[in-house]
Amino acid sequence: MKKLYKSKTDKKICGVCGGVAEYLDIDPTVVRLICAILIFSLGTGILAYIVAAIVMPEEY
Image (cartoon, rainbow, N blue to C red; front, side, top):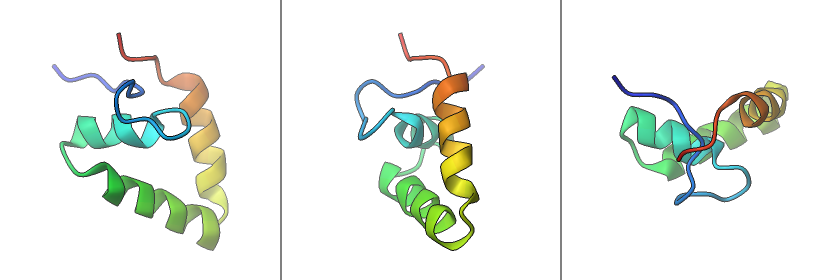
């Protein structure tokens, strides 16, 4: 069973987007672009990112 973790290897700020990309097995750039679009268009992306950075465990 796959688990969602913050990435240690593909990390720009906290590793949230890299971890989501590893979990979904897609390119991290796609996840970062979606996150940026949510942040700039709706403003809810920043809140979701902060919550994910706090809640998601670090990859070991």
